Amino acid sequence: MLPLLLISTLPAFTLLLAAPATKACCKLARELALLALLLATELLRHATAAAAAAGSRERERGARMPSASSKPAPALASAPSAEAETTAAAAAAAAGLPLLDLPELALDRVLEELSPSSLAAMACVCSALRDRCSADALWGRHLRIKWGRVLGAAARREWDAELGGTASGSGARAGAPRPTTRRRSWVDSLACAWPFSSWIGCRWLLEGDHNLPSPAAESTPAPAPAAPRTDTVAAWYRALECGEFWFPAQVYNREDGHVGFVLSCYDAHLRYHQRTDTFTARYPPHGRKAAKEEDGVKWNRVRAPPLATPAHDLHASDCLEELRPGDHFEIQWRKNKDFPYGWWYGVVGHQESCNGNEHLCRCHQDDTVVLEFQHYAPGSRWRQTTVGRKDHREKGDETDGFYGGIRKLHTKDEISTWRRFWPVDVLN
Image 1 (cartoon, rainbow, N blue to C red):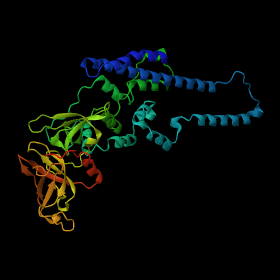
Image 2: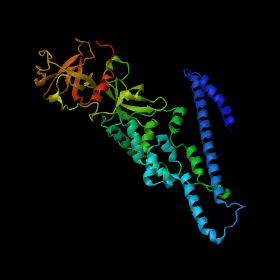
Image 3: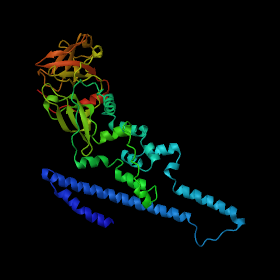
Image 4: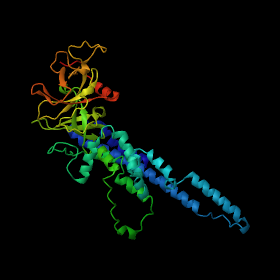
């Protein structure tokens, strides 16, 4: 069977390599070739599993059938025979202990070590494992490991709102358009479902638990399986992996490469692409400009919103009294009042009358704070601005933009993340 399978998939593999990816006319051919390869791999995997299961059942049946050459033992030898049978049973159990016969803690420990795709495949074995493998505790760990850095409380609220069919509770402005899921290609859908309990995998695995049905039983339609629950962490994980859920987050240096957004971080809704391991970001409308999308956003440019302040609202600054020269901060800024705020990175500077000597500096006692954006060249109108420590409100004009609330950066991780996007050349 293996040589026949390899020969049958050789044309598909050749077509996959020969069809250029840049031409639109070859896209369907490449997708069909990849579909053939994936189906051939699935068939080979399940054929191997079915053969192994059949061999195991034959061995068990042979072990239960008495040998034709065996003779009944005398009554006096019954005690030694019972002892030998017990020893043999113990040895058989030690050789292949069923998974469900493990102690509860041991079974939970085994399931914790499984990857998400293996955990989803294990859920197709039987109803008992399906319930165990769908536990929120298991999937919550996988969710924190892969998605914890980019998911915040707003993402959870939007997921709950989507399940309940209510308006989004993420704090977005009323009437803001929600992103719509675009039609995905066959390959996108298949690649999404591949690691997770596909219908083919469940069917093969479940049929291994029962004998072949009789002809009478075949005429009776089987009841439809219950639909999987959607209010579980496993369902949320799958929706994120498959790109079925747009979640709110923030993107560093939006429109990557655009000089006007260097060292900034803007709110967006993101959707994951499993094939490329990147995101599509959809930014809210800027004034009269329509919403803009950016493809190919990498993981290191995405973060969970550190604050619950919506993009169009002014953040109430609570750190102005403690700001000193050398402190790192991020501040809200927008071009005009129709635009949403973005967060911009800067460093607290010294007053003009201060020589910068740390022993003689009294800038922290002044009523104004000097904010420097050192990635701009000295003399640039974007290089420096000042804000008052008391009763700070939005300041600015239509020419230089409007400065909003300030958030002090306390951890080295936050500062190093911003510094990672520092431009090579100083901006004018």
